[in-house]
Length: 189
Image 1 (spheres, rainbow, N blue to C red):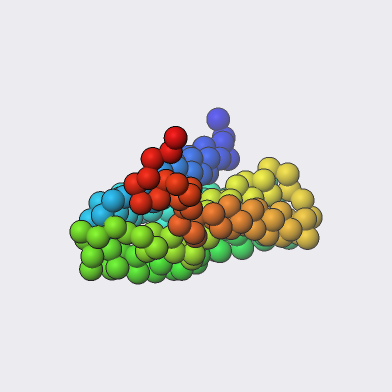
Image 2: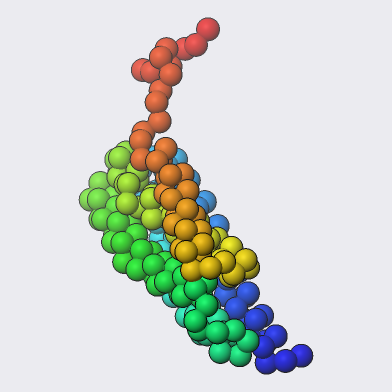
C-alpha cells in the first residue's frame, strides 16, 4: 500500500461524507415542505445545520488530498484540475455563503411565527436553487475528476451539472396547486 492509496482513501471518504450530508439535507428540505408550523420547520432546519457542518471539513480534506494526488501523479496544468478546484471554491461560496444566508433568513422568519404555517418561507428560491445546484455541481466535479476532459469540456460539464440542479429546484419555489373540488374541504366523488 502506497501513500497515494491512503490519500485516495481519504479523498473518497471525504467525498462520501459530503454526499451523506447532502442526503440528510435533501430529506430535511422535503420535510420542511411538509412542516405544519414554523416551530416544526425550525427543528428540521436545525438538523440541516448540523449536517452542513460536514461540508467545510469534507471540502478541506478533498482539496488537500486532491492536491497531494495532483502533485504526486498529475500536472497542475491540466484543465480538469483547475475546473475541479474552481468547482470546490464555488461549492464553498455558494453553500456556506449564499445558501447559509438564505437558511438564516428562513430560520429568522420561522422563529418570528413559530405557531403559524411556514408557507412561502420554506420555498425560498435562493435556498432551493443553491441547495439543489450544489449537489449537482459536486457530481459534476466527480464526473470531471473521473473523465479528465479538456479545460473547456470540464467547465462545460460543471456548468451543465449546476444548471440541471438549479432547474430541478424550480418546482419547489411554488406552492403546490390544490385540485379544484378539493379546496376548502370539499370531497371528491
